[in-house]
Length: 528
Ligand code: BG6
Image 1 (cartoon, rainbow, N blue to C red):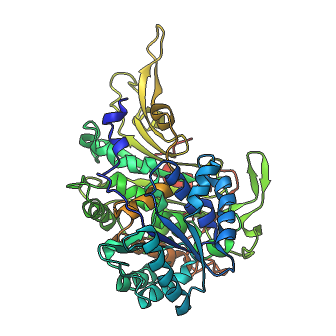
Image 2 (image 1 turned 90 degrees about the vertical axis):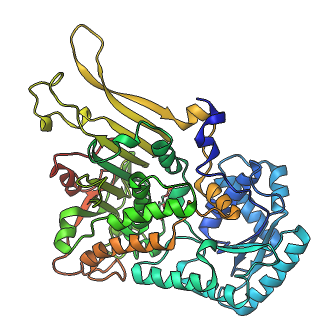
């Protein structure tokens, strides 16, 4: 494979050059900053992709100074970095790492921040470029934005500069709260300065979906209901709730993973070709898919198309694990779903009648995210004569599998003649692996996304209407399960006609009802 001419090397669009800026991280003592953000910034620096002079200011409530913050970040980066940390490089990087102590809702803290940013601007020649990353708890988003506006920090620091805001998930908990948050953000920052993070969009293979579809002439002509039988999108994790029950109890798998990550992948697979690679052309096409999703009408409809599950005790890789309800801080009678499987239909010309099966869950046997495109079977006139179509098994479909993680790559299942005198047909696989073809590990999603936000490219961030459309689709399901969209963990089980919460053993592929969902249509989930 020729790297020099490969579009994967060049990215989705002509990447704008990032210029040095001041990046303020709200929630600097939190998990995300330790595990993802600072390691990603270090890796950008190590690869020469962080504009020299960029400064990072951690904003949080705990009392500490720059020195202590740098030491903590060093330890975290050594633990979580994709590449081993080189001390000399770290020391250089850490010189531009600062700590700013303040409450999130105290005006003085923002006034002091503004003064500090003005000084850093001068010292580091930052040209008034500022990026505010909201990595604090979602309840802090509004207080932070209001004060950024109040202190004028939503405006560029100097002529020619800019001020941007990056908002972490969850972006609201339902449509009304997402709309409210959009209004709050919109009152301080233009849409073009607002970056709503969905880290799945920064994953290398998610970015490759568009390249695969639109840079290869062979796929687009057959990418429709004439040739595609169905599509499966699975995101499986072996992990359980991992000490995040406080958040997860109010979220559940539907809000945590489906409303954002899975629906985003679905839009990339199903969108029409955009007119160009500009952020609004791409996001405009994605929104059209969201608007064509067939909305569920009522609890009955939800029951027919959506399965929710919760893990019971079981074993993962031979290790016993407790039931969800026995996890720390989970209510004993919690109705929070840790698994969702659903059949989604898209009412447009391209996809009419093609079911998209979406499945996500915690405590499944494997950690993997994949999209499998099942093509219609070849007629059985030559090789499978006499075997009715529905008895031929899913192995006889051509399947294009896009592996988001791990083993990032793409494979195509085809039928082949088994060597030998007899004419036996067996499925075989053609496989492309990123690691083998490009000889280096893919960057972490956060590296790409931080760089894009600094460069001013919002293509891989969700636009206001995308987020709202996705909530609209998901809210109907939440209402069927819980009677309202406010809080997922009602112990009373929700309305009387609420679809059941099905139990599955940790370490299994979800409840039998999820298999049934596919079986009803004469299909089955791909085994992996
Ligand atoms: C997060 C969810 O957005 O994505 C987590 O909140 C989930 O529950 C995680 O574990 C999965 O992301 P990744 O990149 O680790 O597959």
